[in-house]
Image (tube, rainbow, N blue to C red; front, side):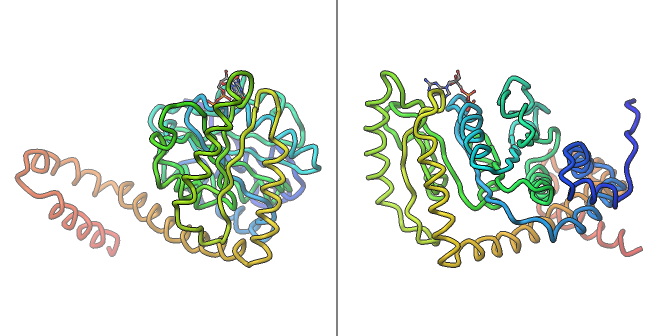
Length: 334
Ligand code: GDP
């Protein structure tokens, strides 16, 4: 068994984070990601202390199907953000990592030059946790990064339909990367995802693909007119870029700055964050309840023993769920 790494005092984590110490920040995120109860307690102490220093960043969600060019885009876009004088944290939510223990950012060859830059902090998606748990941990990690002085945060996710809502719930701006020329353009994307995007960016607009990309831009722009306006008063923008050739990237940054200015002015920026905070609380409650329920040994044994009657249909799933919950609440009362 791997020897457990020594934990630090809560104040050491807090000071390290506030000083912008990347090693301490990394170790604090490891605490957050840990499944051990004692680590969780330590992590929440650290989080409480740094919380007042968080929130000062522009949080940008970036999604798109595998191969669309997310890492190439993040690398170019990230470098631009750094050149603008910001510090950048890139975090990831990978729905597949909860199943395979792999990670979209686990591959060291991704975002090499960004990873080598002192002003950037890149953290892969925590593996081996249920998606809801990954979401909670990513949020907390984001707050730590902010407290450490990262004033732009990218949350990357693979656009396969499960994790977008999670990401949307923790960012200020949501960007969907797409490709042109894949037949009926809007067929492939779920309507729900379009509804939550603030910008639809058609990548790989280079070489022979330029014409198709421009055509797609027109089609998407027309299609977006059919959607009801956003609660924010922002009309989602469609743009084209080539992450590979580093073209069109600066326009996207300017679009985000203009979004930020407008949303701060009309109050939606704060309003959105307030709503997100409330939603996070509820999500945390659900997550904690579930965790406690399933980590209760007696309940786990009980579940094991009733599985045959559930499998065979002898007892209904809902009746059994009620019974197990009742037994759980009786159990914790004692
Ligand atoms: P991800 O899976 O979404 O992270 O996509 P990657 O960034 O790994 O890119 C997938 C492939 O598309 C790689 O071979 C990239 O070199 C290529 N690619 C990414 N962006 C562009 C672009 O703007 N133009 C072209 N032609 N290829 C690109």
